[in-house]
Amino acid sequence: MMLLSGPLSILMGASGIAQDTLFSASLYAYRFDLTAWGWIHLVIGVALVITGLGVLTDKSWGRGAGVAVAGVSLITQFMFVPYYPLWAIPAMTLDLLILFALTRVHIETRGGR
Image 1 (cartoon, one colour):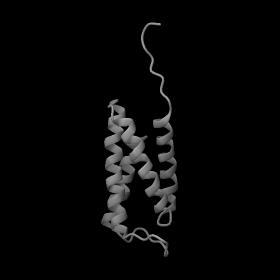
Image 2 (cartoon, one colour; image 1 turned 30 degrees about the vertical axis):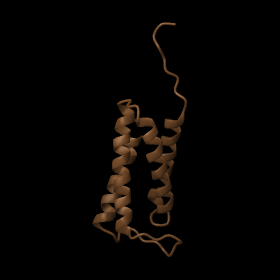
Image 3 (cartoon, rainbow, N blue to C red; image 1 turned 90 degrees about the vertical axis):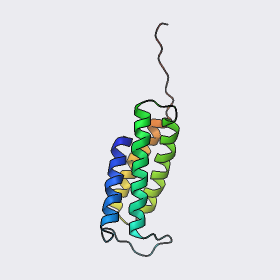
Image 4 (tube, rainbow, N blue to C red; image 1 turned 45 degrees about the horizontal axis):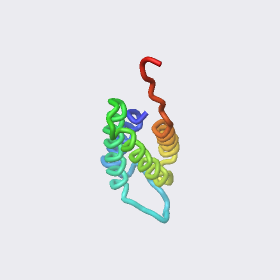
């Protein structure tokens, strides 16, 4: 799932950087330049891809880093809701599914008895 969410965030970031008039929002308590949102999404997307590859290859740092990056992605998507809710809400759902999958208790199976 991280290898799905990561490239989507990268595409969202690239589109925000290339065309900062793509998203618009009214006045809110927090306000970032839309190019800044593009860079935030781009960096988080790259981090999601890297940690997704770490989880996929069963690296020792993969799950912990994946939980951290998916949590940061969830928070930034929540803050992005005023700008583009049709993107942010499904992305938040995907981040929640990633967090659920990574924080489940995995029972390792071993050969023999």
